[in-house]
Length: 529
Image 1 (cartoon, rainbow, N blue to C red):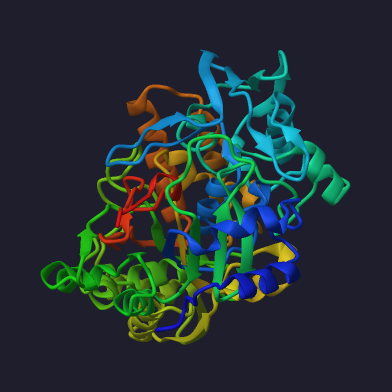
Image 2: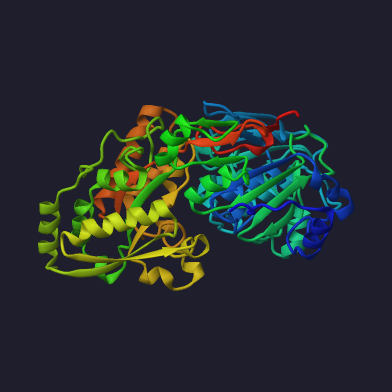
């Protein structure tokens, strides 16, 4: 991995940028205005996957949001530090007028590239309402959004049908709160639809300068940006799926910032690489074993319960995390509203009970498949489950897949693969509100992100109700019941939230992250020579 990031000379930069279909050329930024930054202060950071979408309405994962945070603007953004909170970004002022109305006023002078002029409240209205009109995958982030009223060029009111508590810690500071240019999007797509990896205009401190799949994504300064100057001239984000490979790349000097595996934490803390700081961060991510309840082999709940009870979670965590990750009780981690103190099924499971459920199903032998990311940690989880299920007569075939293939397995719009999916080791990133850890499992999300195809009217009812409640104790009870319903369906075996230790080069970067260790590139600063 020594050469995973190569130096970009002016000549190579010009050459690669000229052929780029979705970079700053598409967004109307002249080469002459962007090229100057290529040889300045550079931050090299690891991403665990290539981006697939830079359209906020259709984003696929947090790795894309990390990029969008640099090239677009939001009304608010997350504060860096150890406590979850938000601060103003594109908004000069924002306030909760009443339980269903949020008024904002934009800062003046935020410009879109490509000659599209100044950002106005009209662009905010378009960006937010577009998610609902298109029935986009990020629709759950907006909950009961009805519309946005415009008061003047810079002022608007976000109107919800019912109160929506998650708007402050999920919607506005994250992906769904990104503001795109209405005129640019309409010109590029004709119907306002998905523009994929080709942003038609930028409004943030950086522009997309180059993207080479499986190699790197380059961000350079936006010459039309009038806000606070970001610290780095260029940010190079390198997709490295396997975390052990990322650790080696860091040690070789190819990265300045990366997260590290929990099982490597002790080693790096005791003998860190030169001029490196190692920090432990609590993870919000949730990792689980899911089962496709619509697959003929898994339709019988007794088969699914047998699998649940055959799985010994501590054994899995010993193998995949060297015992450095705690057992999860659901999708909501400790410290977040709705966390359950314990799951319904004990972490160690019970092989005798598992065999009883198989007997109820009339099954003595069974062959199944399990899909997972082709990354050492997830392969280890799948292989450990394979060994555990063999003890009750279930033969498991492990299918490791690269990220591009994996993240479309259960999606109906991507083809027919969802019909063949059986077991899956899945993992979602999360945010500091329980709605984000549960909203993907409502019935509307079947075939979108609900790959288990779990359906529960009661779950949907609780999901709709919980976002309207401001009392944290009352909200917690609803989210705890929702996780009970997921587990009772037999479609889920919750494994862990993992951990997210990070390390960074102290001679290159003053790192800034969210409380869970996700980097906030706009707040990172270079170290003075």
